[in-house]
Image (cartoon, rainbow, N blue to C red; front, side, top):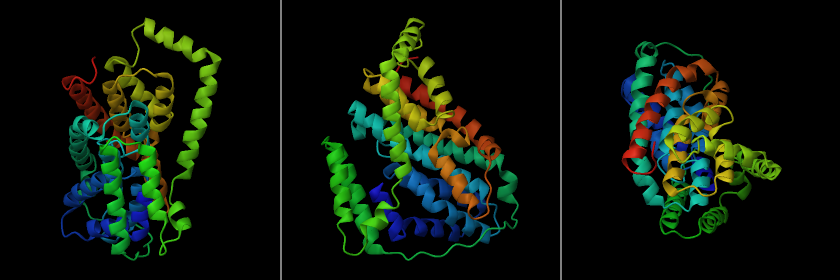
Amino acid sequence: MVVSAQLEHSGFYAACARRIVAARIGARGLLALTIAVASGISAVLVNDIVVFAMTPLLATGLGGRGLDPRPFLLGLAAASNAGSAATVIGNPQNILIAQVGHLDFWSFFAVCAVPAIVALGVAYVVIARQWREELVTVRSVTVRVGTNEVLDCQQIAKGVVAALAVIVWFSLGLPREVGAIAVAALLLASRKVASRTILSAVDWQLLVLFACLFVVTAAVAQSGAVAALLDWLAQRGLWPDRLAALLPLALVLSNTIGNVPTVVLITTFWTDAAPGALIALALLSTLAGNLLIVGSIANLIVAERAATVGVILGFRDFARAGVPITLVTMVFAALWLVATGQIGF
């Protein structure tokens, strides 16, 4: 989060959004470009901060071009979720699962990259079809124009080097918490940018949510109710080490309590999960986040940030594209996980 905050402060995300808006291509090309850029950034940085920074800039810029920003913002949300599914550092749930299961960075990427790329293609096709009238018909949308941010190339370079350092550290199998803290400390030790400025962009609400969930799940575990429930599930062959149980579990829970809480709860009680099953949990819970607006925090951030500049994205807007995107991508992901030997049906 500190690395991502560094890039946001440098104007990197603002520059990406402005380049997308200024591209001399048609609406469908802009949609494809939005999906490509958002997914690429989200694969190596926390997707929540990516959409937080880019949403209002895209909305105001596309509105200025006379385009309806909604399909592009839906593409931003879907791409941030799908792109983040490819790596262990793309989103909070992947980070947690990789830490719990000691998953290798590149082994994870080798399994999840293909379903993530397919999900991006599916997102483009579905949004382009479901919102074809909005993408073809150019009409004015009332939005408030934001202010331009200054692009600091030196600070961007520091952020890029920091991101690469995190990837290298994770790839070497070294203690990840040590590497993350070390990189963050080096970024905060700056005479040009105040530490308070960078830390203000960290998603503290999400970190508090993590801490509270650990407390709650520990209390529930001590009650004995969960142990009885797990025994009941195991006796009926509904243990999440099989896709028949894990897929609907990830889909339903991710869109009721959210994919981050889902992963916290499952990993707390499922302590003997195999690496392949954990990879499946990470991939499926992330892709499930595209179903509804409540499926992932990134979706909610896009909706809230868009509303600040006058663009309303409601539950129906997300479901209109999210339902077909999620169903198609999760079926493909399930088949891919079985084909690669990660988990059985």
